[in-house]
Image 1: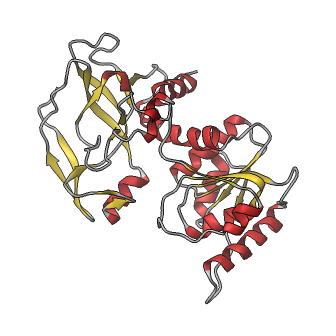
Image 2: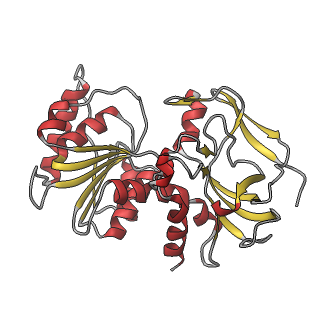
Image 3: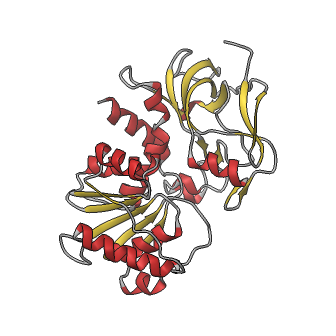
Length: 327
């Protein structure tokens, strides 16, 4: 175990440095993890570019990162189920366990959650990270550390598509945004047995990757016309998408679930137009927090419009995903 704890620190907007931080001292029920793999989340980029996400504002230097895996380098005196050298996926959110949200299994809504790289708490992009022992999940031998780091964003996909979206076998899903979370939402839909998985993005190369990865079909949005309002563009884009992909408002060719993993206003608006009456729309991506929504469509189509914040039931969620991947 090295005495070096080099960490990747965000000091302000577009201001990041490598900085030595003290190695955390662990309590009796905690473990110290040598971080080996960390994914860069869209939230890390938001904090880097804008210094905030909604009401989470970076006011002091903060270590970035929360999608991580590593190897245990020290265990607390009361920890019995883990040992030095164990390879683990790291759950980045520690909750109180006693509030109304926690008791109902909606841990992501705990008001006292300590979540890595969410102000004011430091993240995992350092050599070492201290973690409650029950939030370090051992990885099977056939699951890589890279896979372990992807358990957290995969949990976001499962929460959005299955828990909130309620997608079932032989249903149709459209996913706006082919970044990592969007792709993982498609992978979850494929595992569930969706009949159509439609990927939407403005970058052709991303659509090509999505088609090779999990999507059954792709759609490249039309270009906006000069002077065209966002809502008019979205209506025209949706009409074209329906025509090109043979999408109806009802029946077997309708879209049961829309996932927006882009946060783009026109994607959200287009999604309202293409999802079927009585369908579900889950908002996963975070862009401009203030956008124009068509309340007429929301009401007359009786849409189930849901926000997705991280993922829930994490005390069983990550172990289940790790077990599923290992099998």
